[in-house]
Figure 1 (cartoon, rainbow, N blue to C red):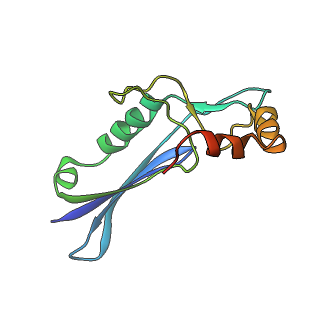
Figure 2 (cartoon, rainbow, N blue to C red):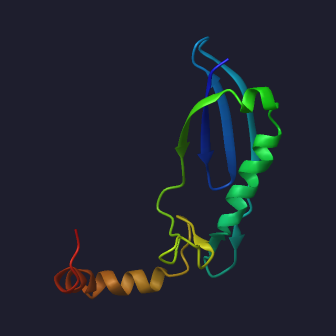
Length: 126
């Protein structure tokens, strides 16, 4: 058997699917929930290690014969998050999620005072 592994990192869970592309059928799937750290100030964050932990838990739910049949992997992930890393790729802080509104007042200040234009004029961007 030959399969492809699809991994979907959502904001509330990680989902995996094993697809036998020769028979055109799903042979296994699993998921694991993810916690979101929230508070009354609009904070919405996750710890990046939780993602790998959830992936490992999900993979352990699948029989090894299926796990070992993977020939290709496709990954989709959350949009508009912020993962701060150092130059070696080490994550430095909790991940800011797309739904985090804790910096809404700063965003409004930047937008209303035309600071964005000054940033683009000052800092080279690709």
